[in-house]
Amino acid sequence: MLTVACVLRSGKCYDAEYVRRLRHGVVSNLSGPYEFVCLSDVDVPCKRIPLTTNWPGWWAKMELFKLPGPVLYFDLDTVIAGDLSEIAAAAQTHPLIVLRDFYRTDGFGSGMMGWNSDLRDLHDKFGAAPDQWRDRLGGRGDQGFIEETVDRRDITLWQDLLPGQVVSYKVHVRDKEFPPDARVVCFHGRPKPHEVNWCER
Image 1 (tube, rainbow, N blue to C red):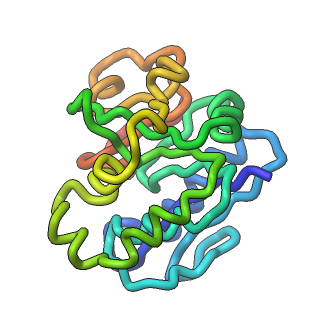
Image 2 (cartoon, rainbow, N blue to C red):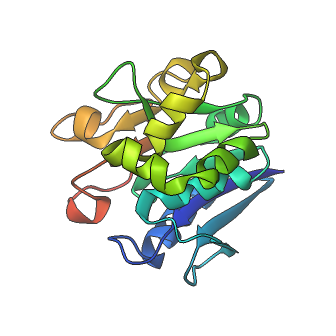
Image 3 (tube, one colour):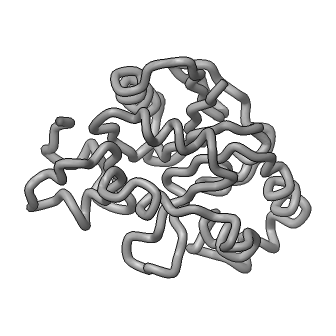
């Protein structure tokens, strides 16, 4: 069964309300069967999988790779804007799908991922030397880790697989007409969804 996952590490700008809103967006736009879960160190309004490390901030996302596929993952600053059926189906049929970075066309983004494979080795490789990886990658974060450790031939990009369905708020939505095919809107960086006067379609 498909797992739809998110991660909440306490102490940052996100809280359980973000989990609730993301889950509501998924429930409203995806028919089963699937299970919505949150990897977290605090109570959340859904099934919680406890975080088992003290990896801070976005590095907590590395614990996702312990989950066996099929998995569909969303960052908390993601707004679900339409039917997720094709996106969910893709997550169940590809080894690893990530975003093409919205600004660096040769880079990856990890704000939305899908996989139907065993990616435990990514978790274990990072976990063997987390401080060294964090020092090396700095602000590139977990997506930098993916860029450096996964063979690009094994990766599919959401924007190539489902053109127009996954968009950036800053690049494709702000001050523009809403993209007609958009199903997922990624709020990377600033602003965050709660900081803008924008309604889900």
